[in-house]
Length: 182
Image (cartoon, rainbow, N blue to C red; front, side, top):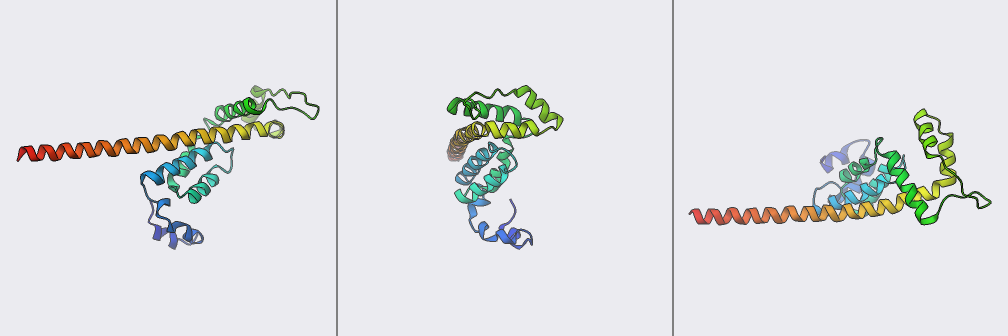
């Protein structure tokens, strides 16, 4: 990680210098990394283009590691966007139902056509999708973001603790062997 003083002195980052007074934002310890991963995983489920901004904002607010927060936003990437957001859409549909028009009729969405349009660069149907189904998508993204980020937080804490315990045991065993050899 860069030295906090270097960041404070950089002419473009000087505006953010007060934010870097918190050591957790740049240091690697169990709490800051697990909170950073939490923030990054949650941010990964927010549809583009604000993923990293959400992750950094949450990391600053919750005092998590910025590098972990930004890095884990790449859980969603150009290869995973479509399946990830489609699954989030399905989760949203599960909780609040299919999108309906003003008369209460279910709007039929042809996902295959929508995906073909996205790859062809035709975004008119995508904007129509967000207008009709954006609520389902956003709810699914929030639910899945909270679920995966919470599980990631717990997993990082568990693995870090497991690593520390294993190191303690190895250190004790080395001390014991050293004492026995003397």
